Length: 94
Image (cartoon, rainbow, N blue to C red; front, side):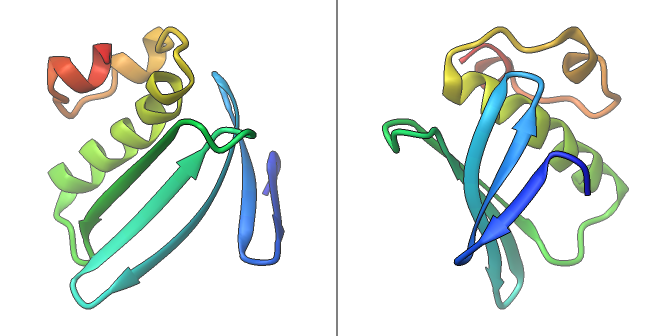
């Protein structure tokens, strides 16, 4: 996958707001992704049910696009805000 690099259980991911480092996984009933900046000073974690419906899946994709920007203190790209599932104003604007 372009923009994705993996090693020792940690991967880097290029986002529109910059590079984040993270790991994903799950426990019974939930899957999660956790990201941090290069220095490890700012982090975000997103968890969702392992069997989401379309609305939960769309919202998770939107949060996954927004969270790195908020975490890195950068403006959220308009394309992330225009996706179909609603996200709370607090998440979208930090």
